[in-house]
Image 1 (tube, rainbow, N blue to C red):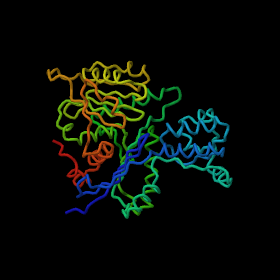
Image 2: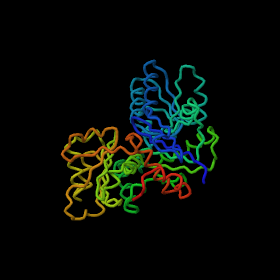
Image 3: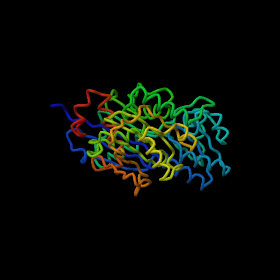
Image 4: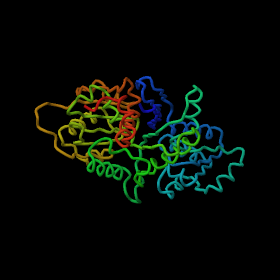
Length: 383
């Protein structure tokens, strides 16, 4: 019998970071889990405190998710207080550092950043999507050994668009190319050494895992997997028995910032769209889902309403079965409550907030055959 393994799976969202310490041989409901504020929310709150006290700000570290921390840093500069950033941290706000300077931020090198930390009034904040110290301390506070045999992290990455290339178009062109090559949700998962160069946020998160491995005493050669967060949640929704049993389904993850929907028939993607959650109402989302199901949703009607885009790979079969089964996940899934489309709120393994972590486990099993025999017994049978 193989020795038990432990895998740390983290789904980094805009509102929360959802953390699962998976242990093979345990029922998955008994594995340790945490739902904590997301890194961007934590950084935003620290910046706001600096603004309240009028302190200069120094941001170093890695490229991470923007949103709340971006707005807080912008507001700090607009209030007339200095914001200095190192290049890698600065790409959190824009991949083009010239645009970061236009926001009123000063770009400085690492040597200058070290010198400035001598200023006692300066607030120094390290940017990172994966805070190894915080997670290890949290586990150790409950006498949990932080050593792991694999790491899997999900985050949303727009990708580094070339100058003059719309971020939204670049993001969806990447999605379209991915599903055209591999029309399954796990296509958006990458071993650390295979992350596409344009996915700078995921590459930075992979780099951050080295600190966890060192501090936890884990083997330095453990497998590391990175994945798109919306796709991880959709893949995790298939760990709900009712969702898994459907041959024809729409899987819709309504996140705090982004909504991603797949049309799956027997596990294969027929169509997909992605939009900004804050830009759509329930009727608009319902209309897009109906068109996705019928194979009539166009890229332009999503993009021109401030979304990323849509792609119909194959027309749905005309089998007379009516509207597909609609499963919904995500922290803003209430957007579809009461809908005439009768959405089912998926609860994989009894915990919707861990859907992304369950998707990461499934993707890790698919990408690391040596781990699959120890992961898959805890997940639903494939068929």
